[in-house]
Image (spheres, one colour):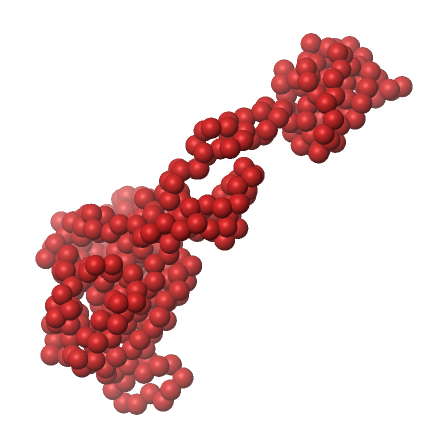
Length: 390
């Protein structure tokens, strides 16, 4: 059995990005860049007014300035004046030789002459210099950057229409168990409604990743065949249940018969001790616990970062921050624990109901409090490590 730290290191060592594809920029939201983007132009591409007002030479600030022209955004003329001022609008090109813009509210205009009434105005005020955001030839976004809505705007502002990214993984979700019944059907004595596949699929949807769902009975051959087909057609397989050592747990045996390489099995943690991670040529496999809260905990701590690594991400684990804990905590030594918790970003509170089967607590939580295996007690207001949910 390995530690949480060792398990995460093995994830980073073994998971590599998928192949590179080219997309239209507008379709690239949430993908990761497969190569750095070098600016083909400067932004702004010219000295640009930051507001509506008047452009002039700063050295002439304290004298009446004749308003000689007007320049709007998109005006393609070359306006050349040796003195005076021009009426100018936000985004418009500053005339050659002019260096400062005064906002229109801080001026006085009379008989075609401008008087500047902004005592705090400095040289170059309200002017966006050419290349002040990015200069031509410089790297704008690094390889491995996840593309946001602002990123799409930024790339488009460079005039680019295509971008190279890592493809999204094809994911299969397989749940095992004779007791599982799909919601909407009749529930008989001894049965439970199957929820893990819907939960995991929803978590994947947040990553914009489509997935297939299969539910199989506790039968070794049926389980093995389902896993074999999933491996053949997907980049990642998430198995829910059947990974322990009970008489009806056939997942581990099936993985062995299919020749899946065992990267690690069992982690010194709670919940989710019987976690499996393995790989074959072209596919990664997670054997998640059957208990839903344990399954989702393991998904966020291990499968979620693996997916981001497959997508070309770099800082892939859940964001970490430290907050004071609201109540004293006592735990047993020996296993690291991921407690479901809620933070208001001032402090953090561990919620009641930490059982590996309890999704109600998870539904109210927005973070984990992580406590390592050697720690037995944490006092009120002591800083603890908090892992924020995606």
